Amino acid sequence: MRLIPCLCNPMKQPIAGYHLDEEDHWVAELACGHFQHVRHNPPWTNRLWAITEEGRESMLGFQLNCKKCDEGAPPDTLEKVV
Image (cartoon, rainbow, N blue to C red; front, side, top):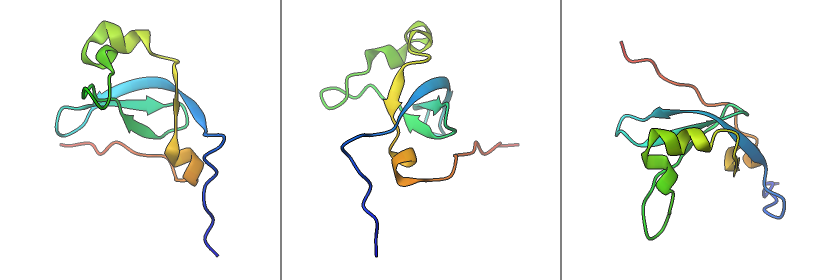
């Protein structure tokens, strides 16, 4: 039997930090250990705050819906490039 995640009460997690991915897109590091892209991609996604350092800093602590928490996924990890 396959469990279907409940979308009626999504898990919210605060933004704890940021990093750039390999394509130079900003990724929010959530307090739960999951990562989530925070692209400003109008008209589909309007996150003007994501394109400046001041904007990103102003959103630290802001809670985003974490689909990975809803799915019970393990924490993400940063791969260090040497």
